[in-house]
Structure formats: structure tokens, C-alpha cells
Image 1 (cartoon, rainbow, N blue to C red):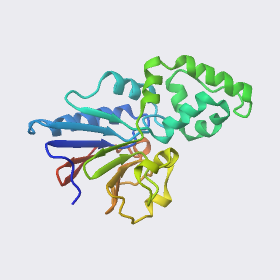
Image 2 (image 1 turned 90 degrees about the vertical axis):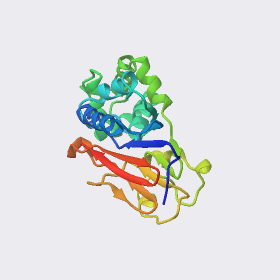
Image 3 (image 1 turned 30 degrees about the vertical axis):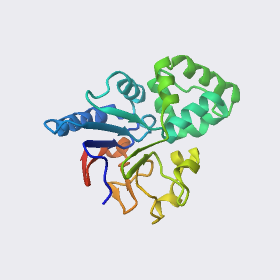
Length: 238
């Protein structure tokens, strides 16, 4: 059985996608679950995709920066939707694909309404500049500081998955944030159980070599947390 290190309890939260209400509710359940347990490390791993699709992307990020759960080590991973935003800040022509995949809701949460032609590069540049001005410096630092992976004992935490057969040091950054079928359909022993989000399943997707916990919070109202303690696994959800 896969295990995490002794004297540790690890909580991993799936894709939030702008649902501040669900994140608040899940945080309350995590705090309650942790109450009265023996002293030790409490680790909270967020698997990425904090923004887009839901209505409160800015509020989600602000709360993660300003109000981390007390007594927890926190790890923030980078999802493909944070990658969308950062790529748009570098190159405005990346905008249309991001907009139609939930970016419009994120822009709106930062006070930017899209009024123009997304096929017009000059218009996209105006939107990029508006977002650059609207982003608090703390938010930009947060987006740029996100990790690509995290290891705890026999568990590897990433946003999307890994390329089967490649050691972690040779994994491509794009795969860690974007991979789907090649990873999801693999039965390869990855050398660790991979905990991931990115690919929606309506309940936790538990396989021998991976555990998927993106339960489509933005549309299902279900935000899921995997709880690991020794060799034990359990789940919390909204």
C-alpha cells in the first residue's frame, strides 16, 4: 500500500475554478477533520485551476494569499488555466482560446468586460494591458510562483498527470498541466501514486496508479479533497 511519511496528514484539493463558496465550505470541513488529531505535519496541497469558469476567481486567489489555513503547510500547484492567463499576459494572441475556456469569467472578476472583437489583435492587446493593470502585484506573484509537482512519500501530486515511462526529472512542463488520455489510460506503475485534477469525473477516480479528484466543481457544486494518513485514504467534499 502507498503511504505518506509518518506523523503527517495530507489534504489535496481538486480544481476550484472560481468557486469561492465551495472552497470556503471545504476549508471548514478540513479544519473540522483536523481537530483533535495528534500533533504532526498537516499539509494542504492545491492541485491548480483556481480560476476560470466560476464567478469568483479573484476572490479565490485573494483568499489563498491572505487567509491560508492556520497550522497547515500549503503547496500551490499550477494548473492549465493559470497557464492560460500567464500566456495571455505574454502574448495577446493566446486570448481567444482562453476566453472561451472560462477566461471571460476571470476577466470579469477583475473588473474587465470584453467589449470588442477577439479576432482583432489590437483589441486583444488592450485587454491584455487592462488585465496587467487590474492584477494586484500579489496575484501576479502568486501565479508566477506556482509549483509543477509535489511529493509526499509514495504519492506524487500534479495538476494533470505525467508522461508514462519518463522519470520526473524528464517530464515536460506542458504534460504536467495538460496531459489527458495517454496518462489516464495508462496502467504503468509510475513509481508513485499520482494524485491529479484536470480531467473531470463525477466522483473520485481511484486507480492502482493514480487518483483523480477533479469533480467538476464549477458545474457540479462538488469540490473534493483527498485525505491521506499513513496508508489510509478518505475523502471530504462539499
